[in-house]
Image (cartoon, rainbow, N blue to C red; front, side):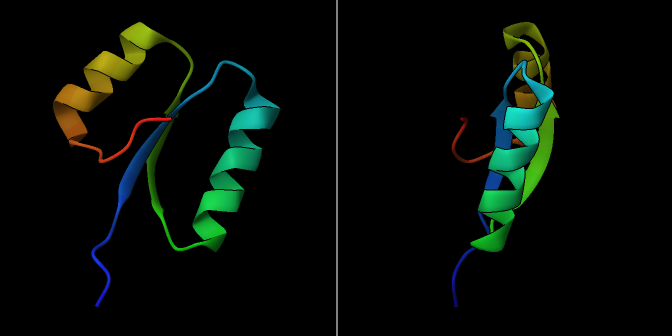
Length: 54
């Protein structure tokens, strides 16, 4: 059984972020959230413990 991978997407372009999200979800990845800045990413990482950060 494959372990669930939690991904936080950091991207300031909404269209690009949504494209990345849809592509990753097709491969079975769990998207924690999409944030638009490094500061927001740091706050989210402290709360959610994602695996890779893109």
